[in-house]
Picture 1: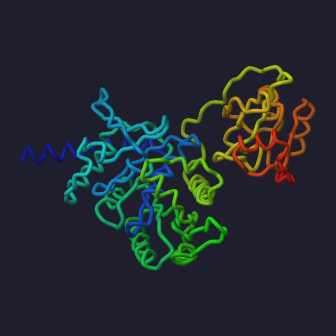
Picture 2: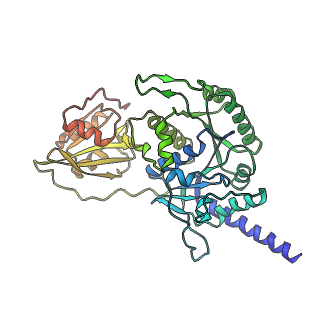
Picture 3: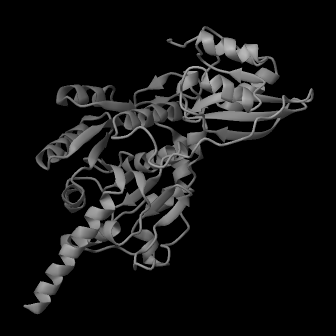
Length: 409
């Protein structure tokens, strides 16, 4: 009897620790699918990295205990950090504001060993991933679950009651049939569904640019409409995802020319929009750079408002400004700076104080344009939504094509 009471006390103590840990995590998103092979882990990995690159603090928890693929997708080489004074372990750091936990780093050199566990043991491990890891305060916890509606997603639903589901499918009926089971699972356990993502939605021919419907078309859209859910986005087949995944390379997100990158950024935008917060939990304060003299004749400062790694559509609502110092017609350095709050006249004055010579935007209000031009800053309106360095190089080569002011105010 004392032994049983001791186990009960330990379980209750763990419940307390889990609740305290979860209070420090704003958004919990369970990435799930009805069947395997639909790219669920890739979506979870890319979503985590994309959110982290936008400045959010992210934890990625891989609860696929039998077939963990997150560490290999990320090329993760680290191991669990040493215990803290409280006896908690540290997750593996992928980049400064993103941490990862998976069963694979705990297996040492025997990473190919089969994990033969029954339900109770798997439940215990998932609970320990939350209670026994010293997670930082997080904006997002992304949880990669194995396919189906078994012990792992059920444990997440019971342990993290405010988690939201992001369900990944492919267009063909065999996948959609299993997705319906995932949707019903979420409704039975009262888990809110953030939305659906349709993966492998056609292959874009590299020669003619036309889309080849290898499976079916619009399956995810029709499913979302029928079930009253959001379709967060559709991702085309991209061979580079496979090759990059085999070597743990996530650089695909940095190539805005790929259709899958553009579509994935739309999904990230939607996830942020429908999350509990659209601002990082601990945003970096505006960089306090003293006012500088205007550039000399052989140097120039080109500035571009940036969101999601490319030009932000609206000047006053961007995440950062890319400040690119130009010397002898070449970019010699790029620095991302966080603007002050968007209030009338504040950002134009700030840009001038930071030494901006040229501001390239998609849209800007007339008043902001006048304030900048009065200070001698060149303003280019209606630029395409490219990466900031690409826009700067187009400007320097005199090939930058500007268009209409897309600002709506």
